[in-house]
Length: 321
Length: 227
Image 1 (cartoon, each protein chain N blue to C red):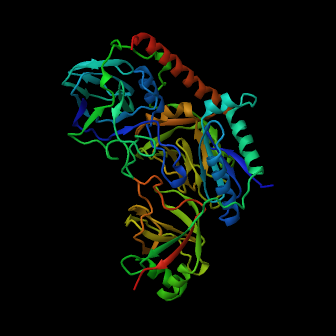
Image 2 (cartoon, each protein chain N blue to C red):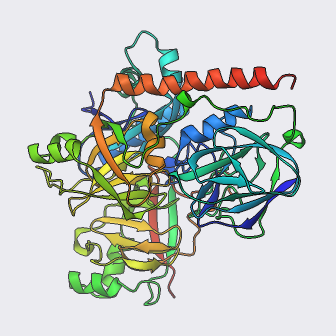
Image 3 (cartoon, each protein chain N blue to C red):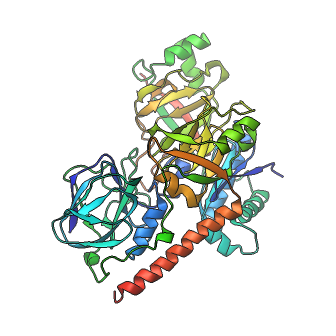
Protein backbone atom coordinates (compact mmCIF):
# COMPACT_ATOMS: atom_id res chain seq x y z
CA UNK A 1 0.00 0.00 0.00
CA UNK A 2 2.70 2.46 -0.81
CA UNK A 3 5.19 3.95 -3.16
CA UNK A 4 8.90 3.28 -2.77
CA UNK A 5 11.45 5.96 -3.58
CA UNK A 6 14.05 4.00 -5.51
CA UNK A 7 16.09 7.08 -6.42
CA UNK A 8 15.34 10.30 -4.55
CA UNK A 9 15.94 12.95 -7.22
CA UNK A 10 17.61 16.26 -6.47
CA UNK A 11 14.77 17.72 -4.39
CA UNK A 12 11.58 15.78 -3.81
CA UNK A 13 9.23 16.87 -1.03
CA UNK A 14 5.65 16.37 0.07
CA UNK A 15 3.62 19.56 -0.39
CA UNK A 16 0.04 20.74 -0.40
CA UNK A 17 -1.51 24.17 -0.86
CA UNK A 18 0.23 25.49 2.25
CA UNK A 19 0.02 26.06 5.97
CA UNK A 20 -2.11 29.03 6.93
CA UNK A 21 -2.69 30.80 10.23
CA UNK A 22 0.88 30.65 11.56
CA UNK A 23 2.60 33.43 9.64
CA UNK A 24 2.36 35.72 12.65
CA UNK A 25 4.64 33.27 14.49
CA UNK A 26 7.22 33.37 11.71
CA UNK A 27 6.03 30.06 10.23
CA UNK A 28 5.70 30.45 6.47
CA UNK A 29 2.92 28.86 4.42
CA UNK A 30 5.24 26.78 2.23
CA UNK A 31 3.27 24.57 -0.12
CA UNK A 32 3.64 23.83 -3.81
CA UNK A 33 5.49 26.27 -6.07
CA UNK A 34 2.81 25.69 -8.72
CA UNK A 35 -0.58 25.84 -6.99
CA UNK A 36 -2.57 25.35 -10.21
CA UNK A 37 -0.85 22.03 -10.96
CA UNK A 38 -1.64 20.70 -7.47
CA UNK A 39 -5.28 21.81 -7.65
CA UNK A 40 -5.85 20.56 -11.19
CA UNK A 41 -4.49 17.04 -10.78
CA UNK A 42 -6.21 16.60 -7.43
CA UNK A 43 -9.50 17.72 -8.94
CA UNK A 44 -8.93 15.34 -11.86
CA UNK A 45 -8.57 12.46 -9.41
CA UNK A 46 -11.61 13.51 -7.38
CA UNK A 47 -9.43 14.54 -4.43
CA UNK A 48 -9.67 17.68 -2.35
CA UNK A 49 -7.66 20.35 -4.17
CA UNK A 50 -5.38 20.67 -1.15
CA UNK A 51 -4.57 16.94 -1.00
CA UNK A 52 -0.84 16.20 -0.61
CA UNK A 53 1.29 15.76 -3.72
CA UNK A 54 4.96 15.03 -4.38
CA UNK A 55 6.88 17.98 -5.77
CA UNK A 56 9.79 16.81 -7.90
CA UNK A 57 12.69 18.71 -9.46
CA UNK A 58 14.98 17.50 -12.23
CA UNK A 59 16.87 15.16 -11.95
CA UNK A 60 13.63 13.64 -10.71
CA UNK A 61 13.07 10.55 -8.55
CA UNK A 62 12.45 7.00 -9.64
CA UNK A 63 9.37 5.66 -7.92
CA UNK A 64 8.04 2.12 -7.59
CA UNK A 65 4.31 1.64 -7.07
CA UNK A 66 4.03 -1.30 -4.69
CA UNK A 67 0.30 -1.51 -5.18
CA UNK A 68 -1.97 -0.68 -8.06
CA UNK A 69 -3.15 2.89 -7.86
CA UNK A 70 -4.81 5.58 -9.89
CA UNK A 71 -2.53 8.60 -10.15
CA UNK A 72 -1.81 11.72 -12.20
CA UNK A 73 1.13 13.94 -13.07
CA UNK A 74 0.95 17.70 -13.43
CA UNK A 75 3.22 20.71 -13.79
CA UNK A 76 6.53 20.37 -15.60
CA UNK A 77 6.95 17.90 -18.44
CA UNK A 78 9.90 15.82 -17.26
CA UNK A 79 9.35 13.16 -19.94
CA UNK A 80 7.80 10.53 -17.68
CA UNK A 81 7.75 6.83 -18.39
CA UNK A 82 6.02 3.99 -16.59
CA UNK A 83 7.88 0.73 -17.15
CA UNK A 84 9.45 2.36 -20.18
CA UNK A 85 6.15 3.44 -21.74
CA UNK A 86 5.69 7.19 -22.33
CA UNK A 87 3.26 8.84 -19.93
CA UNK A 88 1.55 12.17 -20.52
CA UNK A 89 1.23 14.95 -17.99
CA UNK A 90 -2.29 16.06 -16.95
CA UNK A 91 -4.03 12.72 -17.29
CA UNK A 92 -4.88 9.88 -14.94
CA UNK A 93 -3.01 6.62 -15.20
CA UNK A 94 -3.18 3.29 -13.40
CA UNK A 95 -0.19 1.39 -12.26
CA UNK A 96 0.31 -2.30 -11.76
CA UNK A 97 2.01 -3.52 -8.57
CA UNK A 98 5.73 -3.13 -9.16
CA UNK A 99 5.40 -0.50 -11.88
CA UNK A 100 8.27 1.97 -12.00
CA UNK A 101 7.81 5.67 -12.75
CA UNK A 102 10.91 7.40 -14.08
CA UNK A 103 11.62 10.79 -15.64
CA UNK A 104 14.00 10.99 -18.53
CA UNK A 105 14.32 14.63 -19.54
CA UNK A 106 13.18 18.19 -19.06
CA UNK A 107 10.87 19.56 -21.74
CA UNK A 108 9.11 22.46 -20.09
CA UNK A 109 9.04 23.69 -16.51
CA UNK A 110 11.06 22.73 -13.47
CA UNK A 111 8.64 21.12 -11.02
CA UNK A 112 6.52 18.06 -11.65
CA UNK A 113 3.77 16.88 -9.34
CA UNK A 114 2.47 13.42 -8.56
CA UNK A 115 -0.91 12.89 -6.93
CA UNK A 116 -2.68 9.61 -6.17
CA UNK A 117 -6.38 9.04 -5.85
CA UNK A 118 -7.30 9.29 -2.17
CA UNK A 119 -4.01 10.97 -1.31
CA UNK A 120 -0.79 10.04 0.43
CA UNK A 121 -0.62 9.09 4.11
CA UNK A 122 1.77 11.78 5.35
CA UNK A 123 2.33 13.84 8.48
CA UNK A 124 0.34 17.00 9.01
CA UNK A 125 1.65 19.88 11.09
CA UNK A 126 -0.40 22.98 11.94
CA UNK A 127 -3.05 21.95 9.47
CA UNK A 128 -0.84 21.15 6.48
CA UNK A 129 1.32 18.33 5.17
CA UNK A 130 3.70 20.72 3.39
CA UNK A 131 7.31 19.95 4.21
CA UNK A 132 8.83 22.70 6.35
CA UNK A 133 12.55 21.95 6.09
CA UNK A 134 13.45 24.59 8.71
CA UNK A 135 11.03 23.37 11.38
CA UNK A 136 11.54 19.77 10.23
CA UNK A 137 7.83 19.09 10.29
CA UNK A 138 5.15 18.05 7.80
CA UNK A 139 5.21 15.56 4.93
CA UNK A 140 7.76 12.86 5.67
CA UNK A 141 9.44 13.89 8.95
CA UNK A 142 9.80 17.41 7.58
CA UNK A 143 12.58 16.42 5.22
CA UNK A 144 13.21 15.80 1.54
CA UNK A 145 12.61 12.25 0.35
CA UNK A 146 15.51 9.83 0.34
CA UNK A 147 16.26 6.51 -1.27
CA UNK A 148 14.28 3.71 0.37
CA UNK A 149 11.51 5.95 1.73
CA UNK A 150 8.00 4.56 1.54
CA UNK A 151 4.86 6.67 1.47
CA UNK A 152 1.56 4.93 2.01
CA UNK A 153 -1.82 5.69 0.47
CA UNK A 154 -4.49 7.23 2.64
CA UNK A 155 -7.39 5.41 1.15
CA UNK A 156 -7.61 1.68 0.43
CA UNK A 157 -9.81 2.60 -2.54
CA UNK A 158 -7.02 4.31 -4.42
CA UNK A 159 -7.66 1.99 -7.29
CA UNK A 160 -11.19 2.34 -8.53
CA UNK A 161 -13.36 2.79 -11.51
CA UNK A 162 -11.81 6.03 -12.75
CA UNK A 163 -11.29 5.30 -16.42
CA UNK A 164 -7.82 5.34 -17.84
CA UNK A 165 -6.72 8.55 -19.45
CA UNK A 166 -9.14 11.06 -18.09
CA UNK A 167 -7.28 14.19 -19.07
CA UNK A 168 -7.42 17.87 -18.33
CA UNK A 169 -8.57 20.01 -21.25
CA UNK A 170 -5.62 21.89 -22.73
CA UNK A 171 -7.29 25.27 -22.20
CA UNK A 172 -7.25 24.75 -18.43
CA UNK A 173 -3.52 24.06 -18.27
CA UNK A 174 -1.29 27.02 -17.29
CA UNK A 175 0.61 28.54 -20.22
CA UNK A 176 4.06 27.64 -18.98
CA UNK A 177 7.03 29.26 -20.67
CA UNK A 178 10.75 29.59 -20.05
CA UNK A 179 10.27 33.33 -20.62
CA UNK A 180 6.78 34.24 -19.38
CA UNK A 181 5.33 37.71 -19.05
CA UNK A 182 3.62 37.70 -15.67
CA UNK A 183 1.11 40.17 -14.39
CA UNK A 184 1.83 42.12 -11.23
CA UNK A 185 0.11 44.60 -8.97
CA UNK A 186 2.15 47.60 -7.82
CA UNK A 187 3.62 47.25 -4.33
CA UNK A 188 4.05 49.82 -1.59
CA UNK A 189 7.33 51.20 -2.96
CA UNK A 190 6.46 51.01 -6.67
CA UNK A 191 6.14 54.79 -6.65
CA UNK A 192 9.77 55.11 -5.53
CA UNK A 193 11.06 53.73 -8.85
CA UNK A 194 12.84 56.40 -10.86
CA UNK A 195 11.42 56.99 -14.36
CA UNK A 196 14.26 55.00 -15.89
CA UNK A 197 13.93 52.20 -13.32
CA UNK A 198 10.24 51.92 -14.07
CA UNK A 199 11.01 51.49 -17.76
CA UNK A 200 13.54 48.79 -16.92
CA UNK A 201 11.22 47.02 -14.49
CA UNK A 202 8.28 46.91 -16.90
CA UNK A 203 10.13 46.90 -20.20
CA UNK A 204 13.00 44.43 -19.92
CA UNK A 205 13.50 40.76 -19.14
CA UNK A 206 15.15 39.49 -15.99
CA UNK A 207 17.07 36.25 -15.79
CA UNK A 208 16.48 33.76 -13.00
CA UNK A 209 19.94 33.34 -11.49
CA UNK A 210 21.58 30.24 -10.12
CA UNK A 211 20.86 31.64 -6.63
CA UNK A 212 17.28 30.49 -6.79
CA UNK A 213 15.40 27.97 -4.71
CA UNK A 214 12.01 27.39 -3.07
CA UNK A 215 12.55 30.47 -0.88
CA UNK A 216 13.10 32.90 -3.71
CA UNK A 217 14.70 33.65 -7.06
CA UNK A 218 17.49 36.18 -7.39
CA UNK A 219 16.89 37.91 -10.72
CA UNK A 220 19.62 39.49 -12.79
CA UNK A 221 18.98 42.42 -15.07
CA UNK A 222 19.68 46.10 -15.48
CA UNK A 223 20.10 47.99 -12.19
CA UNK A 224 16.85 49.19 -10.63
CA UNK A 225 17.20 52.52 -8.83
CA UNK A 226 14.83 53.97 -6.29
CA UNK A 227 14.42 57.66 -5.57
CA UNK A 228 13.98 56.99 -1.86
CA UNK A 229 16.90 55.12 -0.35
CA UNK A 230 15.71 55.45 3.25
CA UNK A 231 15.74 52.60 5.74
CA UNK A 232 12.57 50.54 5.93
CA UNK A 233 11.16 48.65 8.85
CA UNK A 234 10.06 45.06 8.27
CA UNK A 235 6.54 44.01 7.38
CA UNK A 236 4.83 40.94 5.96
CA UNK A 237 5.73 39.76 2.47
CA UNK A 238 4.13 37.09 0.32
CA UNK A 239 4.64 34.44 -2.37
CA UNK A 240 5.09 36.53 -5.52
CA UNK A 241 6.45 39.66 -3.82
CA UNK A 242 9.19 41.35 -5.88
CA UNK A 243 11.68 43.23 -3.72
CA UNK A 244 14.60 45.43 -4.71
CA UNK A 245 17.81 44.53 -2.88
CA UNK A 246 20.54 47.01 -1.87
CA UNK A 247 22.60 45.93 -4.91
CA UNK A 248 19.79 47.25 -7.18
CA UNK A 249 18.81 43.75 -8.28
CA UNK A 250 15.48 42.04 -7.76
CA UNK A 251 14.42 39.08 -5.67
CA UNK A 252 11.17 37.26 -6.35
CA UNK A 253 9.83 35.58 -3.21
CA UNK A 254 8.60 32.01 -3.65
CA UNK A 255 6.64 29.47 -1.60
CA UNK A 256 9.19 29.05 1.22
CA UNK A 257 9.78 32.80 1.64
CA UNK A 258 10.34 34.25 5.10
CA UNK A 259 7.16 35.74 6.52
CA UNK A 260 8.52 39.29 6.84
CA UNK A 261 11.03 41.44 5.01
CA UNK A 262 12.44 44.94 5.01
CA UNK A 263 13.38 45.57 1.38
CA UNK A 264 11.31 47.82 -0.91
CA UNK A 265 8.25 45.99 -2.26
CA UNK A 266 8.05 46.95 -5.92
CA UNK A 267 5.24 44.66 -7.00
CA UNK A 268 3.46 41.36 -6.41
CA UNK A 269 2.81 38.65 -8.99
CA UNK A 270 -0.94 37.96 -9.18
CA UNK A 271 -2.24 34.60 -7.90
CA UNK A 272 -3.24 33.45 -11.36
CA UNK A 273 0.34 33.79 -12.64
CA UNK A 274 2.11 32.17 -9.65
CA UNK A 275 2.23 28.82 -11.52
CA UNK A 276 4.19 30.51 -14.33
CA UNK A 277 6.92 31.70 -11.96
CA UNK A 278 6.67 28.49 -9.93
CA UNK A 279 7.89 26.58 -12.97
CA UNK A 280 10.97 28.73 -13.65
CA UNK A 281 14.54 27.62 -13.08
CA UNK A 282 18.02 29.11 -13.41
CA UNK A 283 18.61 30.57 -16.87
CA UNK A 284 14.91 31.20 -17.56
CA UNK A 285 13.66 34.72 -18.17
CA UNK A 286 10.72 36.63 -16.79
CA UNK A 287 9.12 39.98 -17.62
CA UNK A 288 6.55 41.95 -15.64
CA UNK A 289 3.38 43.62 -16.80
CA UNK A 290 1.21 45.81 -14.55
CA UNK A 291 -2.43 44.85 -14.22
CA UNK A 292 -5.40 45.94 -12.13
CA UNK A 293 -6.90 44.51 -8.95
CA UNK A 294 -10.08 43.72 -10.90
CA UNK A 295 -8.28 41.71 -13.58
CA UNK A 296 -6.19 39.88 -10.96
CA UNK A 297 -9.25 38.89 -8.96
CA UNK A 298 -11.28 37.90 -12.03
CA UNK A 299 -8.45 35.68 -13.26
CA UNK A 300 -8.25 33.98 -9.86
CA UNK A 301 -11.99 33.34 -9.98
CA UNK A 302 -11.70 31.92 -13.49
CA UNK A 303 -9.34 29.22 -12.19
CA UNK A 304 -11.86 28.44 -9.45
CA UNK A 305 -14.58 28.07 -12.10
CA UNK A 306 -12.40 25.81 -14.21
CA UNK A 307 -11.71 23.60 -11.22
CA UNK A 308 -15.40 23.35 -10.43
CA UNK A 309 -16.04 22.38 -14.03
CA UNK A 310 -13.24 19.81 -13.93
CA UNK A 311 -14.47 18.31 -10.66
CA UNK A 312 -17.97 17.94 -12.06
CA UNK A 313 -16.56 16.40 -15.25
CA UNK A 314 -14.30 13.86 -13.57
CA UNK A 315 -17.04 12.85 -11.15
CA UNK A 316 -19.39 12.23 -14.04
CA UNK A 317 -16.85 10.15 -15.92
CA UNK A 318 -15.78 8.11 -12.93
CA UNK A 319 -19.28 7.28 -11.71
CA UNK A 320 -20.31 5.03 -10.06
CA UNK A 321 -17.92 5.82 -7.26
CA UNK B 1 -8.78 58.36 14.33
CA UNK B 2 -5.77 56.24 13.52
CA UNK B 3 -3.78 57.42 10.51
CA UNK B 4 -3.39 54.45 8.16
CA UNK B 5 -2.31 53.74 4.59
CA UNK B 6 -3.87 50.75 2.82
CA UNK B 7 -1.58 49.11 0.30
CA UNK B 8 -1.85 46.02 -1.85
CA UNK B 9 0.28 43.02 -0.90
CA UNK B 10 -0.72 41.17 -4.05
CA UNK B 11 -4.25 40.26 -5.10
CA UNK B 12 -5.09 38.29 -1.97
CA UNK B 13 -3.55 40.33 0.82
CA UNK B 14 -3.24 43.93 1.90
CA UNK B 15 -1.06 45.80 4.36
CA UNK B 16 -2.28 48.58 6.63
CA UNK B 17 0.68 50.81 7.44
CA UNK B 18 0.67 53.11 10.45
CA UNK B 19 4.12 54.59 9.90
CA UNK B 20 7.73 53.70 9.08
CA UNK B 21 9.20 53.84 12.59
CA UNK B 22 9.67 51.38 15.41
CA UNK B 23 7.32 52.62 18.09
CA UNK B 24 5.44 50.90 20.87
CA UNK B 25 2.39 53.04 20.18
CA UNK B 26 2.15 52.03 16.51
CA UNK B 27 2.94 48.40 17.27
CA UNK B 28 0.14 48.30 19.85
CA UNK B 29 -2.27 49.33 17.10
CA UNK B 30 -0.82 46.71 14.72
CA UNK B 31 -1.10 43.89 17.27
CA UNK B 32 -4.56 44.92 18.47
CA UNK B 33 -5.89 45.06 14.89
CA UNK B 34 -4.36 41.70 14.06
CA UNK B 35 -5.77 40.13 17.24
CA UNK B 36 -9.20 41.59 16.57
CA UNK B 37 -9.30 40.16 13.04
CA UNK B 38 -7.98 36.78 14.18
CA UNK B 39 -10.48 36.49 17.05
CA UNK B 40 -13.43 37.76 15.05
CA UNK B 41 -12.68 36.99 11.38
CA UNK B 42 -14.71 38.25 8.41
CA UNK B 43 -15.82 35.74 5.74
CA UNK B 44 -12.80 34.88 3.60
CA UNK B 45 -10.23 35.94 6.22
CA UNK B 46 -7.19 33.64 6.14
CA UNK B 47 -4.73 35.17 8.57
CA UNK B 48 -3.17 38.36 9.76
CA UNK B 49 0.45 39.32 10.43
CA UNK B 50 1.32 42.21 12.71
CA UNK B 51 4.74 43.81 12.16
CA UNK B 52 6.52 46.84 13.69
CA UNK B 53 4.05 49.42 12.42
CA UNK B 54 1.75 47.52 10.08
CA UNK B 55 -0.84 44.78 9.93
CA UNK B 56 -1.10 42.55 6.88
CA UNK B 57 -4.32 40.71 6.13
CA UNK B 58 -4.49 37.63 3.91
CA UNK B 59 -7.83 36.64 2.39
CA UNK B 60 -9.52 34.29 -0.06
CA UNK B 61 -10.58 36.33 -3.10
CA UNK B 62 -13.50 34.08 -4.03
CA UNK B 63 -14.99 33.89 -0.56
CA UNK B 64 -14.70 37.65 0.00
CA UNK B 65 -16.25 38.39 -3.39
CA UNK B 66 -19.16 36.01 -2.74
CA UNK B 67 -19.75 37.44 0.74
CA UNK B 68 -19.56 41.13 -0.21
CA UNK B 69 -21.22 41.31 -3.60
CA UNK B 70 -22.08 45.00 -3.27
CA UNK B 71 -18.42 46.03 -3.29
CA UNK B 72 -16.48 46.29 -6.56
CA UNK B 73 -13.69 43.87 -5.63
CA UNK B 74 -12.18 41.89 -2.75
CA UNK B 75 -9.48 44.50 -2.11
CA UNK B 76 -12.12 47.20 -1.65
CA UNK B 77 -14.23 44.91 0.54
CA UNK B 78 -11.37 43.92 2.83
CA UNK B 79 -10.09 47.51 2.99
CA UNK B 80 -13.51 48.66 4.09
CA UNK B 81 -13.89 45.84 6.66
CA UNK B 82 -10.46 46.50 8.11
CA UNK B 83 -10.99 50.26 8.18
CA UNK B 84 -14.20 49.77 10.10
CA UNK B 85 -12.42 47.43 12.53
CA UNK B 86 -9.67 49.99 12.95
CA UNK B 87 -12.19 52.73 13.78
CA UNK B 88 -13.71 50.57 16.50
CA UNK B 89 -10.38 49.27 17.78
CA UNK B 90 -9.74 49.23 21.51
CA UNK B 91 -5.97 49.57 21.52
CA UNK B 92 -5.86 49.75 25.31
CA UNK B 93 -7.22 46.19 25.60
CA UNK B 94 -3.99 44.26 25.83
CA UNK B 95 -5.54 40.86 25.14
CA UNK B 96 -3.61 38.00 26.68
CA UNK B 97 -0.14 39.51 26.49
CA UNK B 98 2.24 38.08 29.05
CA UNK B 99 5.55 38.95 30.69
CA UNK B 100 8.10 36.19 30.17
CA UNK B 101 11.33 35.95 32.13
CA UNK B 102 14.18 34.44 30.11
CA UNK B 103 17.40 33.28 31.82
CA UNK B 104 20.46 33.97 29.71
CA UNK B 105 24.08 32.99 30.07
CA UNK B 106 26.42 35.81 29.06
CA UNK B 107 29.68 33.83 29.30
CA UNK B 108 32.28 34.09 26.52
CA UNK B 109 31.14 30.95 24.70
CA UNK B 110 27.43 31.89 24.78
CA UNK B 111 27.98 35.54 23.92
CA UNK B 112 30.97 35.84 21.60
CA UNK B 113 30.05 39.40 20.54
CA UNK B 114 29.56 40.86 24.01
CA UNK B 115 33.17 42.01 23.71
CA UNK B 116 32.24 44.08 20.63
CA UNK B 117 29.26 45.62 22.42
CA UNK B 118 31.46 46.41 25.38
CA UNK B 119 34.20 47.97 23.22
CA UNK B 120 31.82 50.08 21.14
CA UNK B 121 29.98 51.36 24.18
CA UNK B 122 33.12 51.86 26.26
CA UNK B 123 31.38 49.99 29.08
CA UNK B 124 32.72 47.00 30.98
CA UNK B 125 31.01 43.68 30.16
CA UNK B 126 29.10 43.60 33.45
CA UNK B 127 27.79 47.13 32.96
CA UNK B 128 26.63 46.28 29.44
CA UNK B 129 24.85 43.17 30.79
CA UNK B 130 23.21 45.22 33.54
CA UNK B 131 21.91 47.71 30.98
CA UNK B 132 20.67 44.90 28.72
CA UNK B 133 18.86 43.06 31.54
CA UNK B 134 17.57 46.30 33.04
CA UNK B 135 15.05 46.85 30.23
CA UNK B 136 11.72 45.13 29.68
CA UNK B 137 11.39 44.44 25.95
CA UNK B 138 8.29 44.31 23.83
CA UNK B 139 7.87 41.58 21.21
CA UNK B 140 7.07 43.72 18.18
CA UNK B 141 6.75 40.89 15.71
CA UNK B 142 7.90 37.40 14.78
CA UNK B 143 9.61 36.51 11.53
CA UNK B 144 12.81 35.26 9.89
CA UNK B 145 12.54 31.83 11.60
CA UNK B 146 9.62 30.05 13.27
CA UNK B 147 9.40 31.72 16.68
CA UNK B 148 12.12 34.36 16.09
CA UNK B 149 11.00 37.45 18.00
CA UNK B 150 11.97 40.99 17.07
CA UNK B 151 12.07 42.87 20.38
CA UNK B 152 12.94 46.37 21.50
CA UNK B 153 14.10 48.72 22.30
CA UNK B 154 17.69 48.17 23.34
CA UNK B 155 19.21 51.03 25.36
CA UNK B 156 21.08 53.40 23.04
CA UNK B 157 24.28 52.99 25.04
CA UNK B 158 24.62 49.34 24.02
CA UNK B 159 22.87 49.46 20.63
CA UNK B 160 25.25 47.82 18.11
CA UNK B 161 24.80 47.41 14.36
CA UNK B 162 24.66 43.99 12.69
CA UNK B 163 27.88 42.22 11.77
CA UNK B 164 29.16 43.06 8.29
CA UNK B 165 29.46 39.40 7.46
CA UNK B 166 26.76 37.15 8.91
CA UNK B 167 27.81 34.00 10.72
CA UNK B 168 27.20 30.78 8.84
CA UNK B 169 25.69 29.23 11.95
CA UNK B 170 24.30 30.90 15.05
CA UNK B 171 23.44 28.33 17.74
CA UNK B 172 19.85 27.86 18.81
CA UNK B 173 18.92 30.00 21.83
CA UNK B 174 21.42 32.74 20.97
CA UNK B 175 20.40 36.22 22.10
CA UNK B 176 21.41 38.90 19.62
CA UNK B 177 21.44 42.66 19.19
CA UNK B 178 20.92 44.48 15.87
CA UNK B 179 20.83 48.23 16.34
CA UNK B 180 18.15 48.86 18.96
CA UNK B 181 16.52 45.49 18.35
CA UNK B 182 17.12 42.30 20.27
CA UNK B 183 16.01 38.80 19.38
CA UNK B 184 16.42 35.14 20.24
CA UNK B 185 17.42 32.60 17.57
CA UNK B 186 14.66 30.05 18.02
CA UNK B 187 16.60 27.57 15.86
CA UNK B 188 20.20 27.25 14.72
CA UNK B 189 20.52 29.41 11.63
CA UNK B 190 22.85 31.67 9.68
CA UNK B 191 22.61 35.16 11.16
CA UNK B 192 24.19 38.58 11.35
CA UNK B 193 23.12 39.85 14.77
CA UNK B 194 25.71 40.50 17.50
CA UNK B 195 25.42 37.50 19.81
CA UNK B 196 25.69 38.50 23.47
CA UNK B 197 24.32 35.44 25.27
CA UNK B 198 22.35 32.24 25.05
CA UNK B 199 19.22 30.86 26.70
CA UNK B 200 18.21 27.26 27.28
CA UNK B 201 14.53 28.22 27.07
CA UNK B 202 12.84 26.63 24.04
CA UNK B 203 11.39 29.43 21.91
CA UNK B 204 9.94 27.04 19.36
CA UNK B 205 8.55 23.60 20.18
CA UNK B 206 6.94 22.34 16.97
CA UNK B 207 4.83 19.65 18.61
CA UNK B 208 3.10 21.97 21.08
CA UNK B 209 -0.35 23.14 20.11
CA UNK B 210 1.10 26.67 20.17
CA UNK B 211 4.66 26.02 19.00
CA UNK B 212 6.03 29.49 19.76
CA UNK B 213 6.67 30.70 23.32
CA UNK B 214 6.28 34.37 22.42
CA UNK B 215 3.71 36.22 20.42
CA UNK B 216 3.50 39.81 19.21
CA UNK B 217 2.69 42.11 22.12
CA UNK B 218 4.31 39.94 24.81
CA UNK B 219 6.91 41.42 27.15
CA UNK B 220 10.29 39.88 27.91
CA UNK B 221 12.72 40.37 30.78
CA UNK B 222 16.15 38.79 30.45
CA UNK B 223 17.86 37.66 33.65
CA UNK B 224 21.43 36.46 33.98
CA UNK B 225 21.76 32.75 34.68
CA UNK B 226 25.49 33.03 35.26
CA UNK B 227 26.78 32.15 38.74
